[in-house]
Image: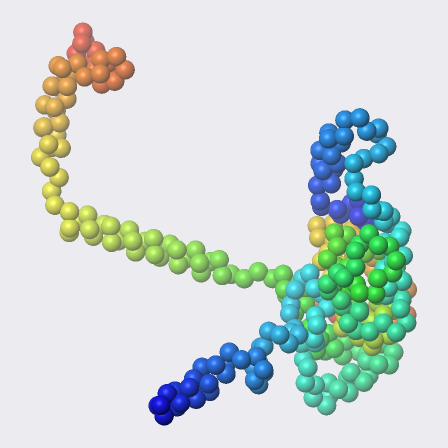
Length: 157
Length: 165
């Protein structure tokens, strides 16, 4: 949902230069690769499924390197929070909800708070994203007993 | 032959061992997973505090229960066990630039001092051909010779009014 807003890449310029190369191509088809592009919903669903794994372990929660091709839309169990933060987007509340519950299963409160800090940092100059996320996550936060960094006074130096 | 054997032994213990990776692991051995404070890696490979004392272990036990029962201080303590710095602390800048800029100016000033000293104590007098008297006579001769009458020197002299244009 936030990707069109927060995407900082110059994809608009890129598509302009691409169409210039395809003189006779009709408007609908572009000369892009033939790999299937994942929609936003599929992306979200994949990540929610990933964090919802009941016996997820700490390594999978953290996982840094990308072992699977992004365009492969089946659930990949080798991505984790570090990879998610590496993408050019702020995760949806439902993905974060799934991740926070994974932290609960792993008895790791520190990681849960860290995830909240990370998404706030990830939204960068768009200051209205984080309050929205907290508002959406409020039921989960109350249920699991996770305090936000603001509650703990950790958002200031 | 004996001396060379002693030399090899000395080399083995004194020189090669610190380079070896299979001997006893040093404190910050880079092949072992390390803790790091990175904005792009929120969850580090290992927690910041690995060796917990009994108090901290009790807290970890309490963490296994409902988190609603933890006090704020306990939550902060749990966070600090796993992470050294919070995101604002990671993002905090330092005043190092003032030191750097100050150092640059000090050295520039010192160089300036050297140049000034050199000007006073090392350089001799300028040649006599740069004295005002000589330059006057020189300029008059240049005007008389009509140096660069089109685009240069004598062009700027008004020969009628006998002054610069």
